Image 1: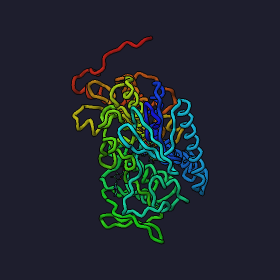
Image 2: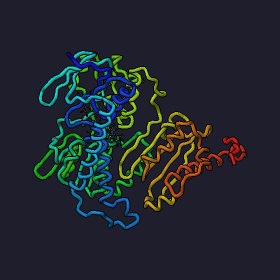
Image 3: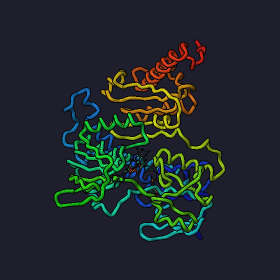
Image 4: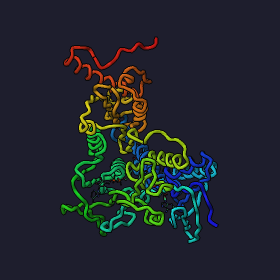
Length: 483
Ligand SMILES: Cc1cc2nc3c(=O)[nH]c(=O)nc-3n(C[C@H](O)[C@H](O)[C@H](O)COP(=O)(O)OP(=O)(O)OC[C@H]3O[C@@H](n4cnc5c(N)ncnc54)[C@H](O)[C@@H]3O)c2cc1C
Ligand SMILES: NC(=O)c1ccc[n+]([C@@H]2O[C@H](COP(=O)([O-])OP(=O)(O)OC[C@H]3O[C@@H](n4cnc5c(N)ncnc54)[C@H](O)[C@@H]3O)[C@@H](O)[C@H]2O)c1
C-alpha cells in the first residue's frame, strides 16, 4: 500500500524546504522527495550558495576591496587556482546540506530520495537512482522543482571550455579569457567574479541594456566599475552559435562577429524542471519554458496542488521562494498568512560591487506620473566609506513629493544587500523620509547613508516649497519630539 501524507513536497530547494517545515509546524505529516546528491536544491548545490561563496573567496584572495587602501598591486595570493576557490565552496555546501537535513529530521519531515512523477492528482511515483520505485499519496502537494540552465543545441557544451552555470563550478583552471552569453543576473555576477580574478571578459547581451529591472543610474555605475576591470560589453547583439575548436572557443553572433576565448559561459536563461514530472497526469498544463502558472495563493489549476519557487517564474530568488513555500503550506492547511506577497521583496545582485533595491525605480514612478524627489548619499563622503576603502558606493532614496513616503531604496557598493533592509522596514511600516531625517544612526556606519540621503531629499523638497509657496516646507507637519 502507498505511504500517505498530509503534504507531499517535490524538490528540496528553499521553496520546498520551507513548505515542508511550515506544514510540520502546523502538526501535519510532510515528506520531501529529492534526487540523490541534490538536497538543498540548486540553491545549495549549484546556484546561490556556491556562487556567493566563490565571490567571497575571489574578494578575499584577490584583495580587490583593499586596493584603495593598500595600492593597486595589493594581492593576498598571486596565482589563484580553482583549488583555492573551491575549497571554501565545498566547505560551505556540505555545512548547509547538513543544516537542512537536520532541520528536516528534527521537524519529522521525511526525505525520500528519487525523482517524482505524477500518476494522478493525488499520487506520485518515486524512482531512485537504482530504479526502485515507490508510490506516495497525499492530500496536498507542493511542486518546488526549480529550473535548470537552458542548453540550446547550437552551443557545443563540453563542461570545461563551454559551460553553463552548473558546470562553471567544475572548471579545472581560471581562464585567461571568457565570453559570457547573456547579461542576466547569473551572467553578470560571474562576469564580475572572473574579471576580478584577471580573466578578460566579454559580455554579449541581445537586449539594448542589462538588468533593466534595476535603477538605470546604478546599472551605469556597475558598468563603469566592470569596464574598469577590463570587461567589454556588446549590447543589442544575439549569439547564434558557440563552437569548440582545437585552439579554443568561438562565439558567433547573428551579426557575423566572432569572438575567440578560452572559455564561454552560456547563461542565457533557465527553464522549469517539469519534463519528468508528468504534470498532465495531475491535470496541470505547463506554460512557456516549462513554468507552472499559479494564483495569488500559489495554487495551480488543480486546487490541492501548489507550485512555488523558480518553477513559477519571476523573481526566481531563493528568498522569495522560501516565503512562497511557507505561504503555500499555510494556505493549504487553513492557516492565515500576511497580505499579498507584493512590492516589498528586495532584490540583491552579488556583482562586484553589489547592487540591491526594494520598491519602485525612477522609471516606474515617472511612467506612472507619481511625483517624487531623489535623495543621494555617496560612500566617499561617509567616514565608514573611507575606512572600508569604498569610494564608489551610493545609496539613493525615492520619496513621494507630497506624502513624503519612502517609495524606493537603491544601493550600490559594500554591504548593499544588507543595507537595503533598513529601507525595506521603513517602507513596510509606511514610514516617511522624516523618520530617517530625525533618526540617529551609529557612527561611523554605512547605515548613516540613509540619513544623509534623506536630508538631501528633504533639502530639495524644501527648495521647491520655497519657490512655489514662499513657506519653509509645507509638506511636513511639526511634531513635538519627546525630550
Ligand atoms: C548561479 C546562480 C546564482 C544564484 N544566486 C542567487 C542569489 O544570490 N540570491 C537569490 O536569492 N537567489 C539566487 N539564485 C536563485 C536561487 O538559487 C533560486 O531562486 C532557488 O534555488 C529556487 O529555489 P526552488 O526551491 O524553487 O528550487 P531549486 O533550488 O531549483 O530546487 C529544486 C529541486 O527540485 C528537485 N527536483 C526537480 N524535479 C524533481 C522531481 N521530479 N522529483 C524530485 N525532485 C525534483 C531538483 O533536484 C532540485 O534540487 C541563483 C541561482 C543560480 C543558478
Ligand atoms: N543575486 C540573485 O538574486 C541571483 C543570482 C543569479 C541568478 N538569479 C536568478 O536566476 C534566474 C536566471 O538567471 P539568468 O541570468 O540565467 O537568466 P535571465 O533570463 O535573467 O538572463 C538571461 C539573459 O540572456 C540574454 N540572452 C538570451 N539569449 C541570448 C543570446 N542568444 N545572445 C545574447 N543574449 C541572450 C537575455 O536577453 C537575458 O538578458 C534569474 O531569474 C535570477 O532571478 C538570481
